[in-house]
Image (cartoon, helix red, strand yellow):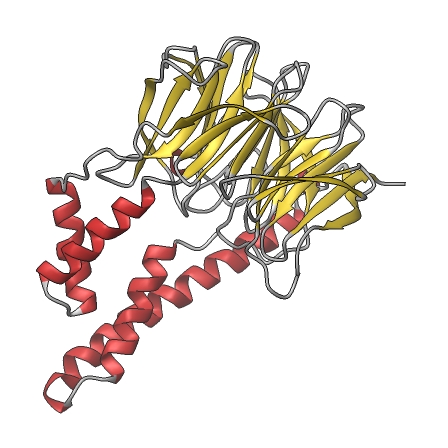
Length: 370
């Protein structure tokens, strides 16, 4: 996957150089050469990695794409934000200001209107639905009735600009050519807006875990609530995520995190203590996680195996044991590999796999090749 920051800097250099006057032309020309070389090198690396993957039989997926559930307008995507499955295998999609419930065949069963635009969702064993977004988390019954509601612990936390953030702003000023004061004000505004983001939800028999952006930098935190959405407690912090993504999942009372900027999958106890971790960065071997920030999303299967989803390239689903042993590539999607959320799910019978496609507001379905 592209490193967005790196490419933005490169493009800014080229654009800025094109607008420079004669006095700066020589320096600008050198900057353009360096930026262009960086972009060309990245493309060459990607092509070489793709060629190597094509020759490796370990990359052959066990499943192929067998269907597509079109939730929104494929030509105007951006309304479908997330989804999960319930015990019956129905799909609960975070769409606009509510949740749409679809059958496994893609038939719209019902719509649950909400007071928020949900960006994260999960279902408890008793059928309760937890949905979060716009700085709030809700507990719903199966009909969509709100049983409990709570504000995100960071929704109103004061934004404090750290020295690390100031240094980031100084680097941005070099490219934007705006004043430090103006760039710093923009940064503070972005951090204030980010407090309403909820990137992940997971539920156990005892707890609800919610992933949110930290209010004063671009790391992520995980808070723990009880099932009535009271007693919030910070359990994990300083998580590094890219592209606005930090998923969380749960299994057997434990919290699982695809720590995407660290190219790892981690398990934690309910108090946040790290219990295990696996993963390496790499674009060629299927055992590794490619790009700047993978895996984006994950799911823990009933037997404890891990499904790790990468937005790519290549956009794919891989399977690992709970200890990190690579068990194979499940699916490779025909997608260009944008830096986006790729929520992954599996049907109750384990025969169908689902992957979020936010580039066209749809959910891809994968099954065993005939």
